[in-house]
Structure formats: C-alpha cells, structure tokens
Image (cartoon, rainbow, N blue to C red; front, top):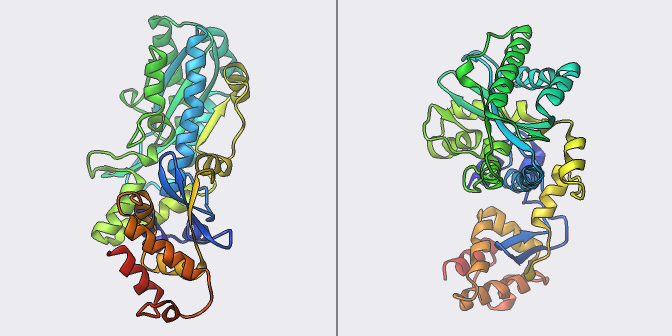
Length: 367
C-alpha cells in the first residue's frame, strides 16, 4: 500500500520506477526464505523515502551493528546507547534543523574532544542515526547513537561521560544559533549484555531491533502528535489531507542524499570488532537482502506485467505465489496466463473471452 501511495505523490522519477521498471526482459516470481517475491526489477535504494528499500537496508545495517556490539561486549568492552535532541518550533524548516543536528554531532567529536573521549572513557568510536518525527511543534530530528568503548566502564564513569557529552552537545548547538537543549531530552546508558545490545540495535517497528537506532523512519509512534514519515504517507492514503502531502514532499526533499549512519572512527571500530565484514553501499545492501537466489516460480512477460501494474496487483501476485500449494488451480491458471503473455497474438487465440490483459488477470485473481 505505501509503495503505491509513494508512486502517486513522489516528485522523484527514481522512486516512481522502484520495483515497477523491469531490468530484465521478464519479471520473475521467486520463492525465498521469507516467502515469495518479485525479481528483475529496478530498485531505488532510498533509505529515507522508499518503504521497501528502507526496510531492506535497515535490516542489513542493523545486523552489521549487532555483530560489532556483540564482539565489543564479548571482548570486555562497553556499548553505550545515547540520545541527542535540539529545541525546535513549528516554523523551523526540516532541512535547516537536520543540518543543525548533523553538523552538531560532527562537532561534538572533533579533534581533541575525540581524543579526550578515547583517553578517559576508552571510546574507540561511535555511530549515529537520525530519527525524524513531526508533531504539534513541527519537525523533530533527533539522534540515536552508540559509543563503543574498549573497556568496562563503571556507573560513575558513564555518569561522568554522559555529563561531558551533554556539555559538548549543548555548547556546539548554541554556537550554531539554536537554543540550549534541555538535559531531560538527552541520555546515555549501558547495554548490559550482548542480548540487550542486540535487542536495542535490532528493535523497532515490525523488525524488532537496531531499527530503534538504525531506522527511526520506520517507527510507528503511538500518537498523532509525533508521526514518523511513513505514517504521514499512511495519512495521505487514509485522509487525503493536503497538509500531509506538503509535509511528505518537504521530508522527501530534505532527506535526499543524506546518510543513514554517520560514524566516528568507523574504520577503527570495524577493524577491531568486525574485520571480515564487507563494506556495503545502500545499493549493495538492498541486493544482498533481495538477491535472486530463490527458486524460480514464474516469468511475467511485459504485456502481463503492465496489467499487474495497472491493477496494482504486485502484492496479489506475491500472495498467489505464496499460496500455490493450497490453491493449485488458481496458481495453474496464473502460470497459463504467464505462458500466453510470453507469446505473440491476441488472447482470443488461446480460448480467452477477453482481449484485455487486465480483465484476464482479474479473472485469475478472483478465482
């Protein structure tokens, strides 16, 4: 559903073409470990605006962070989970607030400050992800971050580190022209075990984990006072409110070209606790999650694929493939239609009472 709404409202050609434009002569229906899926389609690899690609990328990034956290804790280190926010108001533009938060994060760890964190608290590196919500007070970008220390920190040391980080954060935010942050909106706590670290890192929305850190944009808040971006997309579908369309397009524009994760000494962290993990771009992450290695079930030729898109029936085809064992007659009719689509000639030559691919597909799906 979200993907269909996105195609209707986006101003990006790439987002409109994602998972609709074939990159092979025929679209493939395959059986994967998690169920049936469609292969041979272009993917936008947008971690911010595309519901499908965002899910694939976030799951991959969450796994990477989980592996690092587990090894850090196993080797006698400490993983800390933190939060930074900035004061914001209704009139603040998202792009400006986003820039302020991102640049302030970088400034917190500049030069000698990074060296102090390493020397006093054993901080080898850190990684942050941005969560965006919109509520009564406008856009609210805030940072979720992890700090990886190479030693066990006492509670007193963590308290000291928390106070130092907040002082650094407050200082750089004020220097950039924003009001001083409220200390109640900041935090730093220990991941007390590998299990707790994993839960934190891979927990959010339906995926359960570092999506709390990695993918705030997938999160479902409990109140309309603080909606995640994809909830705004849902509201466009449900209520057709023009203000939601304006908000979505501002978000889509502001998020373009942004990184999902920003590392401090990322190379050092990965070399120490995940030396064999490959470096994956967002495009690589999508492909690694969705690579076409499942059993080939069917090939959908262009005439039939156009009908699938026109009827918005992509998920119906996936569901049909998933139920092929329990509905063999229906699945067989679909395979027959795929076979006819791969040949030239009118549908009537094959005994069908229609010349419309849309009607023929509807007949199969409604069997």
